[in-house]
Image (cartoon, rainbow over all chains, first blue to last red; front, side, top):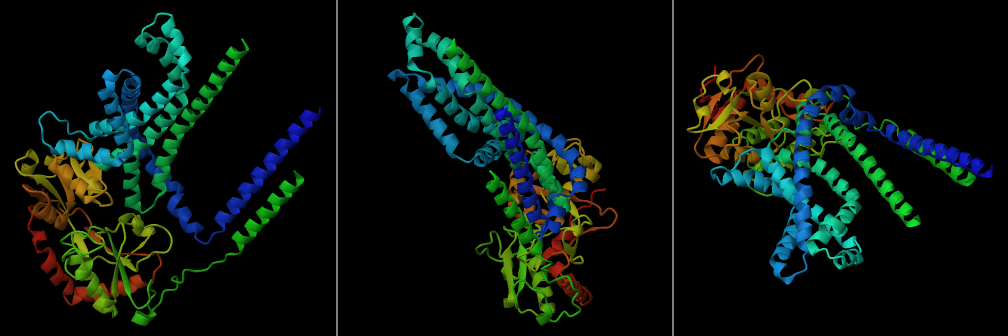
Amino acid sequence: MTAGGEGGRAVAIALVSTVVVFTALGLLITHAPGWPEVRRTFFDWAEFKASMPEIARAFLLNVKMFCIAEGFILVIALLLAVLRSLPSPVFFPLRALAIVYADFFRGVPTILVIALLGFGAPALQLKHVPLSTTFWGIVALVLVYTAYVSEVYRAGIESVHPSQEAAARSLGLTRGQALRHVVLPQAVRRVVPPLLNDFIGLQKDTALVGFLGSVEAFKQSQIDAAATFNYTAFLAAAVLFVALTIPLARLTDWLIARDRRRRQTARVA
Amino acid sequence: MRQLAALMLVFAFLAAGCGGSSNKSSAGSSTAAASCDKGDLNLVNSGELTVGTDNPAYPPWFGGKEKAPWKVSDPRSGEGFESAVAYAVAGKLGFAKNEVRWVVVPFNTAFAPGKKKFDLDINQISYTPARAKAVAFSVSYYDVNQAVVGLNGRPIADAKSVADLKPYKLGAQLGTTSYDYIVHNIKPSKKPSVFDTNDAAVQSLKNKQIDGLVVDLPTAFYVTAAQVENSKIVGQFPSAGTPEHFGMVFAKGNSLVQCVDDALAKLKSDGTLASLRQKWLAKAAGAPVLK
C-alpha cells in the first residue's frame, strides 16, 4: 500500500514539474520581441507543406546512399579490425597500414574526403573512372566510416576476455577458428549498440554529398530556402532525418536491454 | 518534494514575468520617413552607408585587385557593375565614396531574421514575390537573362534551341533562379545538379560531370573568359513573360528602400545606369539566343 502511494505521488510530481517547465519555456519564447519573425521564418506551416514532397523524394537518395555504404562499411571494417589484431610480427606492415588508415580517415574532415574524391578523381580524366557524384560520395563515406567502425570492432574484440581464446586454443582450435567461432561472435554482439550509433551518424553525413551537386534532402531544402528566403524547408528535412533515427535509437535500447537480460539469466543459471 | 514543486512554480512565474514585460521595443524603422536627407536616414552605422555582398566577389559584378577579406576582386574599388551601381546610388543619397562601408554578407544570412548588419545588400539577387515576403527589394537595377555554358567539342555545344538541351545533365548554383529556370522551362530528362559555390559548379563542368551550366549572362561571360578553358556560351535563353531582374535587398519595412528607389529612378533617367551597363556588361548582349 505504501509503495503504491509513493508511486502515485512520484507520477504526480513528474507531471506537475513537466507542465511547469514547459509552460515556463513556452512563455519565455513566445513573449520574446523577435518571436513573430522567427516563427514566420522557421515554422511556417504553408511552406512546410509545400516543400515536404520534393524533400521526401530527394531523401530517397540519402537512403540509397547510406544503405549501400553501410553494407560495405560493416564488412570492410571487420576485416580491418581483425587485421589489426593479428599478433605475429610477420604481419607488422598490415597492422601498420591499418593503424595509419584508421588515424588518417578519422582525422581528415569528411567533407574534404568527399570533395577530393568527388571532384579530384574525375578531374584526373582517366578512362574508366566513374564520374557519378553518388558513386564517389558513397566511396568517400565508406572510407571515412570504415575507420571509425573498425575501431568499434577492435574495442569489441579486445573486450572479450583472453581466457575465451585460451580455452578455445586448448580445445585444439587454430587461431583462425578460435577467432571465427568463439571471439568474433561475442565481440560483434557486444558492439551492436555503438555500431547502430555510427549508422545513425552515417545517415546525417550523407547530406555532405550534396556538396558535389547531387540533390539529396538537405540540398533540396537549401534550394527551397534560397527560393523563398524562408528556413522552414530545413525543418522539413530535419523531421525526415529524425523520423528515421528514432526507431533505430529505440531498437538499440531494446537490444541493450535484451543483452543485459540474457547475461543476467546466464549468470543465475 | 513540496519545496521542489514550490520552487518550480516560482521559477515559472518569474520566467513568465520576464518574458511578458518586454514590450514592443520597436527596431525603430516602421514609420515611413518621408525625408531622404542623409541625416534623417535610418542606418546601421550612422554617417555611413553599409553595403553587403558575398565573398568571393566575381567579375563583371565587381573588379579591381583582390584585397582582404574579399577574394578575386574588391568591392571597395568601384570597379565592376554592382560596385559602380552601389557607389552611384550612395552618391545620389549624399554619401561620399569614403562614407560607404562594405561588409561580407554570405548569401544565406542576407535573409536571416533579426537585425541586419547592412543597410543594403547587392549580390545578384533576383526579385521573386515569395522572397519579397521576407525582405524588401529595391526596383530593378539590371534585367537578367539566363544562359548556358558548355565545353567546346561536346554535343551540347551544338544545341540551337531550348528543346535541344533536354537530354543533357545541367547544373546551376544554389540561390540563383537558374535552377528554377532548368526545372520549369527546360525540363531535362536527367536530374540537374545544384552547387553551393561557383567553384564547385565550374569544377563539375570541367570534369564533364555536368554537360551544361546555367548562369546569368554576365556570369557566363566570366566563366568562359576566365574560369573554364575551351568553353563557350551555348546560348542565352529568351526572356519568357516578365523579365527577371536583380534588386538590392533591405530589411523588411526599412524606409531606406524608398530613398534608394528614388536614387535608382534618377540614375535611369539621367542615363548613368545605362552607361554603367555599357561599360561593365557590354559583352552581355552578344550571345546567340536559343529558340
